[in-house]
Length: 105
Image 1 (tube, rainbow, N blue to C red):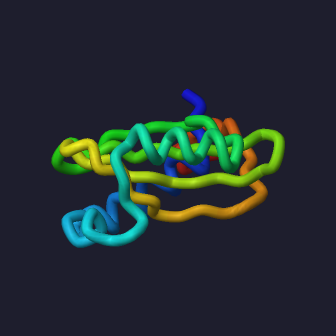
Image 2: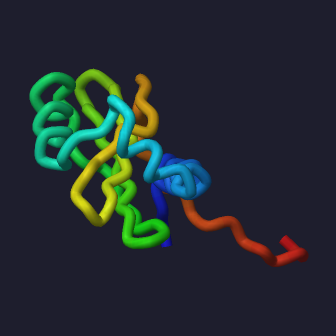
């Protein structure tokens, strides 16, 4: 089965930050999900590229623009509040096979 490497990396990174999520919700980088998704689309041309479910029903999403290469990782809490976790440039979707664990290989 193929997986998006960035999605897996983002999920691991996000999972490590989820313990602090109540504090993040009070920061300036959070807003209702609809507002965040609209802003990412309008200002950066980003659309959802990957999604994962984290602890306590939190949803991690990766948004990216194929045109500009910009990307944003968000976490949405069950309350509907979405927080920006990371962003950057040079997004590239990868499909890599899961490495074999056969010791003879």
